[in-house]
Image (cartoon, rainbow, N blue to C red; front, side, top):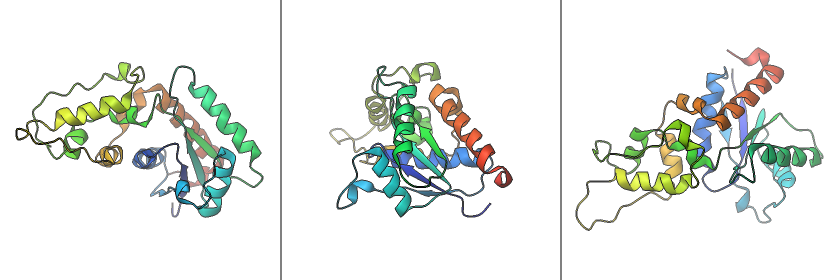
Amino acid sequence: MNDFRFTLIADGRTDDALIPILKWLLIKLGINAPEPQLPILGNLRNPPKKLQDKIAIALDLFPCDILFIHRDAESDETPIETRTKEIRKAEKLVKKSLPPIVCVIPIKMIESWLLFNEDAIRKVVGNPNGKQELDLPKFSEIEQISDPKERLEKLLIDASFPRRRGKKVNIPSNYCVRVAEMIDDFEPLRNLSAFQELEKELKATLNEHFPDLLS
C-alpha cells in the first residue's frame, strides 16, 4: 500500500519515541510502509490547549488516514478507561470530519515501553559491549513501576559502566527517542496490557476502515 499516513498528537516531549513503535505495529497488522507525521503544536504562535483544538489544528496541518492520540495513564487514579473517555469526549467536540482515531495510553508513561531491550539501552550510551549487569524489570512488573522514566535513566547510567574515573555519564537529552530507534522488534510489548489494548483497537480500526489495504 502506498502513502498511508498516520498523525500522532503528543502528550509530552518524549512522544517521538512512539513513532517507531506505531510503525512497527501498523506493519505487523498489514500496512506496508506507513508514513508518520508528528506536529509540534507547542511551537505554534498560539499553541492550542484544549485537546479538541489540538485535534483540529493537527489535522489541518497534517491530514492523515489514522490519527493516534497519546495520553499517559500516569497513576492508578487515571486508568486507561479514564484517558480513553477524555479522548472520545474531545473527539465529539471537533466540528469537522475526522479520520479514525486510535488511543495510545501506556501505563504509566511511554518510558515503560522502552524498559525491555538491553541492547538498545547499551547502544544509546555508546557502550554496546558493556558487561555491567542491568536490572531490567520482568514484564509482569513493568506496568506496576511507579516511575518508568527514573527506571530507564538508571538503566542508562548503569549501562555506561565501566568508564574512566571521574568522567560524567552523558545521557542524551532525547534518550527515549534514541532507545526506541535502536529497537527493531517490539514483539515483547505484546505482553503488556496497555499495548494489548492499543493493538486490539488498531486492528479493529484497520479491519473496519481499510480492509482492502491490508497485506
